[in-house]
Amino acid sequence: MSATAPELLRPRALRRGDLVVIASLSGPLPAMYEPNVTRTERVLEGMGFRVRRAPLLEVGRQRWWSSASPAEIAAELNGLLRDPEVRAIVASDGGQTVFGYLDLVDLDAIRVDPKPILGYSDLSLLHLALYATTGLVGFHADMAVPGFGDRWQSATPARRAELASLYTRVLTSTEPLGELPRRETWECWRPGRAEGRLIGGVVNRIALVQATRFAVPPEWFDGAVLFWEEIGGIAAHVWSYLQVMRHAGILDRISGMVVGVPRDIAGLDGPGEPSLREIVDDVLGDRDIPVLAGVDVGHAGANLPMPVGIRVGLDAGERTLALLEPAMR
Image (cartoon, rainbow, N blue to C red):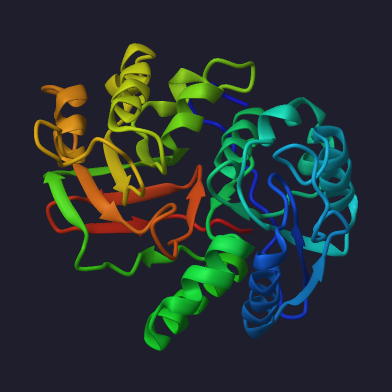
């Protein structure tokens, strides 16, 4: 695989009737969220797929902050990756566990039979690491508990139908999807156009993975469109993570930036406090790159699918983001 032009590992496009497995890849399943998984099953079945739960996705199963030990989670994930009947894996929820099993994932199984893994939050770390090690297209997209089973349910019927169509197409089509559905909440923070590979996730996971042997090679950020989002913590931490990316040279390589909607970040927009836009402007300085913000990626609502590694077209002034390549083959 070239350092400057990685060969993408695209999963096979799903077909009607294919098996999608909901798996606990990080945090546990509290009893109060079990109905969310049931609702997710209905959403995925409505897209035309068969759905099954992996064994670790069980109410009451917990080890510390995780559904099981990292080794147990990796063993179950590897079993799903090796099972030819399983055509896609949807994470149940995020958490704080993926760092514990990055070195236990069966990369050969992924190379032999790449499958879409859907999730965000802690799962964005898995997408970045697998992209770096195998070229796998990762799907920074909704999960069972906070996404399909929750945020989707509070959306309008028209929005749910729009999202269901979008997810079905991104998983089943071998053609580029083109422009993602724009919302009025999208904001142009810096105008301009860019085309490049889509790389990103939760801002802290982007910064932290670069300190490991699973780091995305710096050259892969050349001309990339960086997307990020964040939940919790404080504004100063967001500023610090962006500074880490500046020091790593990432911000000097990218051609554009997409900022998700922040959620529960303390220290924003109060007296004497910066806005998120001011934080971004402060770190970017005089770098001439377009920035589109308020995009539906992350913890603040139902997510647009963001396939890590594929080429996208960004026009911040026109507030558009387009998928220029298919995520599947």
